[in-house]
Length: 387
Ligand code: PMP
Ligand code: GLU
Image (cartoon, rainbow, N blue to C red):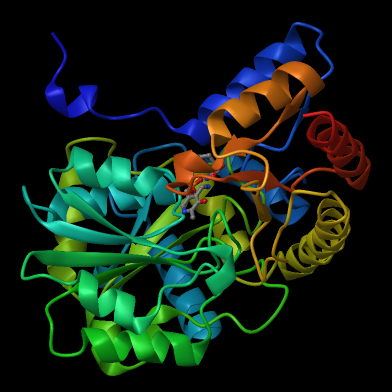
């Protein structure tokens, strides 16, 4: 009965593990979950107040499909101020979260058989959506020993006449790796002279602990032309449930086609979210963003220290985002089984690395209190020592 398209789609493993952990907790089990890619902070007051005002001012109607002029201008101003990128309103669209931006993007660009290069470990959604849209996934594997970053040579040898796009995520989910400006310049050099597009997912931009974040499109005019910049507010201002994402590209036909698709599917995103999100973009929540960043950095340091004290486990200290990608290869090469047993025996939920395209690891989200982190890692230590 169902289409082969949907039958080949896997459920998001990050969401699946988080839901399972929540269900077990609701049944009264003693569960600590490090599975969710979701800040544990509340949305900043300034944004919540803007939402209340939006309701009072009756911002409750349909808006333009691609976003109100005000929210689009806020996105344009943000991309200019933070990233040095200049776009016009017809080069920007707001979507129901960055996941929806990616869905629109792949839907309007990927033809059957088009190849899309995805560095692994990758965020779980990319390959599934690419396949759903008829594309062929070409993975480039990276390891902790190379900082989880692709090299220009790896990229060169993955390119074929069918390559349509590469997806870059900096800072990365699940590894926290950040590409430096010079690393991005080297990637840009490989792409020069090709028609390959770059989908640059910059969702964790504001969560940078070491080094400097560089927006991929800012590398050169050539990169600006070929890059679609994708971002949102889920992580930077703890707005996961509000559903706000956006994309920008100088290629207006991409934005226009996404708007057409959106006009026949979801229409505009929530009108109240649009009004409130202006405050998430215009600097009003900067102090909150910094408070969260500093707190995440403390948790990262504590978690990395504790993990590296456990015999058989090792982890790189991530430069950004709020995940650790923990190497379990000395103990297990079946991350699914490892994670399952850890949940069953110790009540600790983590996401198996295999879901991110890298066996022999698990992802640990440190978007959780220091107390939870200490207790959770102590249970993991117990689990590993008794294996
Ligand atoms: N990109 C990355 C790298 C992510 O981790 C996520 C998950 N939050 C998203 C995009 C999508 O986020 P959202 O749909 O909540 O905007
Ligand atoms: N992106 C988050 C994560 O990686 C949220 C879950 C999802 O959308 O897959 O956990």
